[in-house]
Image (cartoon, rainbow over all chains, first blue to last red; front, side, top):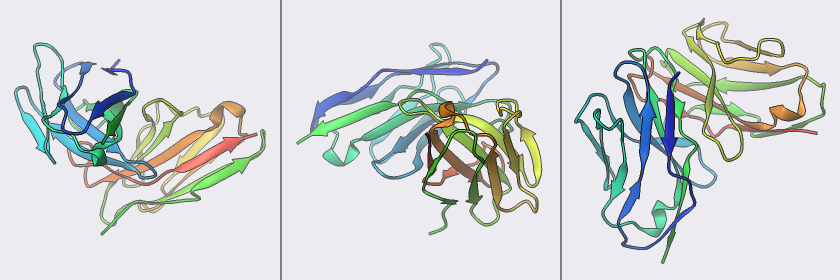
Length: 113
Length: 114
């Protein structure tokens, strides 16, 4: 079945550091890929998505590129802020949009001033 | 701003009791999902509705869990009887039309079974 593997947390960085959160997936066919973010006390929010190979999703300074050859969708940001502290979930959807999302376990990101 | 509403936010129930959660999706969203998120894990899909029809309930423990969306709008997820292992966050999400469109999540119901 489908699965998503993302790096274990917590990840602790200083403000303005470069961020990478690794995500790899296993799926049949060509899934759509997503990053969701969960801020403390809030629900999950879509951060960015990519629907086909080599697509780059971007939002709020975050980027991720759909790499079919390495089955990866790593999340990056050039300069993190304290307000980026949250839990980040990588997810996929296969079945042409008819299936629900399959999530990774989440990565807790802590940004120190 | 439109949002997915869930109630209650928190629920404590005793083992073997019945418990129910309610979800009101964003108006006009045809697709509704229920997910379970165990502490420290990612959400896992329990059931997906398209309008009032169940599209996927393959991961729903049907001996104790049931879900309905009678008029294709709001939805109820029920557990009877609750077990200790059911303690988790139950998340509802909705989208205009399947996962090809953005899924919006509610804040969830935190269930503790004692």
